[in-house]
Image (tube, rainbow, N blue to C red):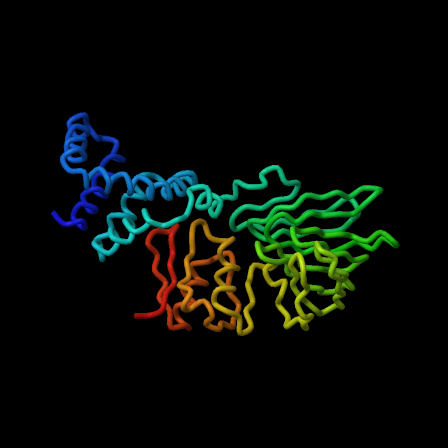
Length: 315
């Protein structure tokens, strides 16, 4: 028996094990199949690892029947089975997958949002903070200081004016401060992005490099350096109203903006990540946004399940 057939049998058993009417006789048949050939045991073990991704939709309330139907689509069934089997070899931890659906990190943060969620908070000094999806921050606003530490994600802050009391936004790479006005701050793994909408802002990296932003300017910084300051193009804070606005942006950046709004994983082939994109894409309807990308770019958007999407070049 070839390997592909063994994988298909393993998937069929994986599905049957979920059925409510699975009997003792069925269990005995499964055990007989699994022990009849060492390749059966190996295939099922590998698939048991990949099936952890389906714990994610289960946590969201998806029923076993919904998952079963997803896996049992008649159209291109063989390809679907092969793709699911391939997931067993992906080096993505279960905790990472769960976190991409409903963040489990920074659960004790003062301010936080989940997947597809934006929230606005009014601080004790009158400043107003809006958090983008999958974001978390801690706040210290009292007589001694005005500080937000952005642990992950993105925020917009409208800083209430208080003479001689700057408001600081800290990230892993340094800090941004202003006395008043509106700023956007986005914390990424490799750097922090800062956009001044209506503010004079000072930036200081973790290792002491400083820069200033005038209203209408943006830049990014890491622990050591600050990128050249550039003029805003408009639409940088359109996410507050539920849209991502792209001006000749890389496809990878567009997908990066959609990911916090989609429950699951979106993978982009690195070969097409630099395709240029312009337009406004609805964050609260990522299927619509993905369909728009497929209609305007030479890419194929393939949904293996509602929780796993890949984007690749058209064949």
